[in-house]
Image (cartoon, rainbow, N blue to C red; front, side, top):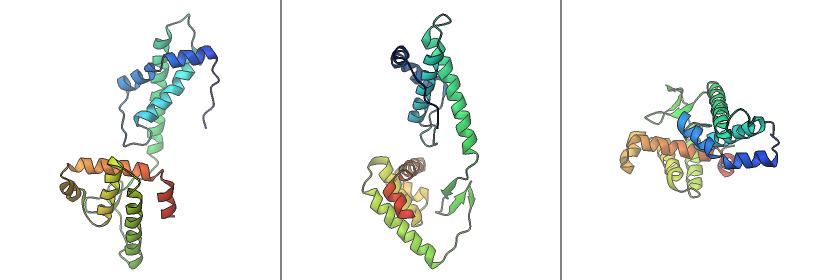
Length: 192
């Protein structure tokens, strides 16, 4: 948990008047990637605002103008944040679904059992996905439908042809739905 930064009224006003510094720092120095945890615009903006508060606390008006100083503090803070996120990401194994519906880890196909329990589990999973899809709209809902089709054996290319879109769209839909489902208490309670 991060330490809270106590701000005076003047420092709060300084931060409020210079929020554009955070937007500028993100736009000019960082690649926003909504598909990677921690690198979405909202995540970067929130972290940038924390660094803007740090800049307000440590600012000395005799040395420079606040936007100039804050820009450097925010940029450096976001750089440290991104490096930290990348370091954390290296410790995880990415599970995915291959082109033909097989389970993969870091791009390598995992051996799967083909028994009755696996078939029941697949049925339960598709039913759970169907039940949660009703509460979503847009890209997240399309992603859930694409996940169902993948579990049933369709490849991303086949799903893309079904929806008349490029395969990259289907991949983006699935990524978005996975982000939503990881935070969905009803879905999570159904898989335990």
